[in-house]
Image 1 (cartoon, rainbow, N blue to C red):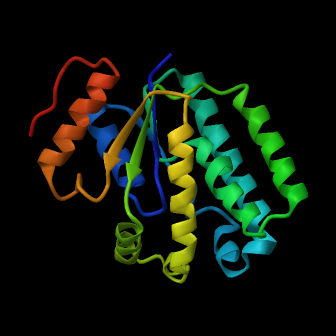
Image 2 (cartoon, rainbow, N blue to C red):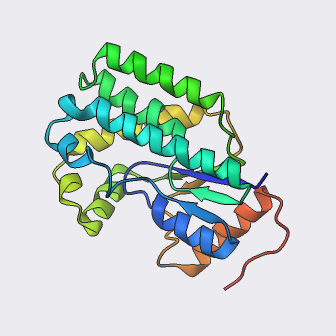
Image 3 (cartoon, rainbow, N blue to C red):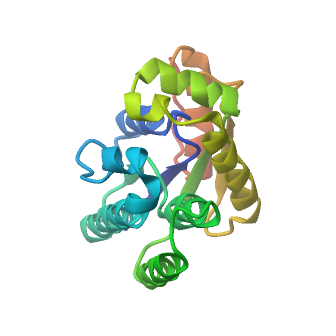
Length: 210
């Protein structure tokens, strides 16, 4: 069975970008979060209480299906978001802020934990730890209107949940990247440093240099 890397981190941290870069240099197959074709995302940002359960269920199914494909293919793969974040960050946030009803949340978590019984755990989780200021700046740069209209408090709440979750995460080895310090897009030496660390943690012998 191939190796599986998963990325984690707040919205705008750079997960999809790093996924593409790692996939290219390592020869892994990339898998991306279903955003543009998610039929509930735009409605969710307009009315979170009405569409929260629908949105999260779609994301969960898409993530489960991606991991199922990885298991069946046996290929080395990298995913731009972990399935654990769906339940432990986003669904939990919607529940504690009153945007997902208790019966919806309980049903969602039952589905989630049943799915986990059939899934491969990551060989490595890469967590991009970026401050809320950095997150907001990157969201502005990529220019998705539905994200730019979200109040800062929402990203701050997600940040708190992420910090709690990552401290208790025990499903796989973790590699934490300081998202404020390391600019793997603009600075090739930063990316080189990250790649070599990832290879070491996955027991891939050859090193990468620019």
